[in-house]
Every structure is written in structure tokens, then in C-alpha cells.
Image (cartoon, rainbow, N blue to C red):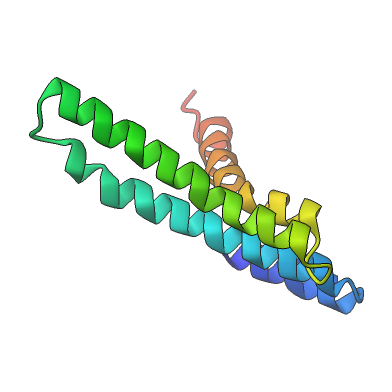
Length: 110
């Protein structure tokens, strides 16, 4: 989230308000997506195979709908940039992968 805030502040300084709004909107919904993953994971435990499948499939569908909301908002409103909203949706995943790869590269024991 800190990276999105810094990016949005830089975009505001460059007078790109729609891009800053899109970046923040996409990042917030990405964070909500990860919260939903954490919330739905315990619901899949201690269930039968069929129930686990249905709960998992329903959770994925709900999370896809959740991620579609900011994209639809950005398409409908000219005040929010679509491409920066999409970038914001991938912001959390990008930071997590970057952190993981950084640990792999720089924490090698030789």
C-alpha cells in the first residue's frame, strides 16, 4: 500500500489525478481480494471433498467479481484511469513476487 501511496503522490505532483485515483482504487480492491483469500481459506477446512470444491469455486467467483468492480468503475468514470486501475490491481501481487525474488537473489548462502 505504501508503494501505491507514493506512486499516487508522484502522479498527483505530475498533475495526473485520474491515474493517481485509479492506482489507489485498484490497490484497495487488490488488498480486499487478499483479505477475502484469508477469510475464505478456513471455510474450506474440515469439509467434504464436494463441499470444499464448491466453497473454493464460489470463493474464486466472488473474488473475480470483486476485482471486476474497480475496472467497471474506471470504465464508467472519466475521473479514474482504467490502465492505472488495472496496474493497481496487480500492485500487491507484484510487491509480493518482488520481495520473494529479492530474498532468493540476495539471501543465497555460498
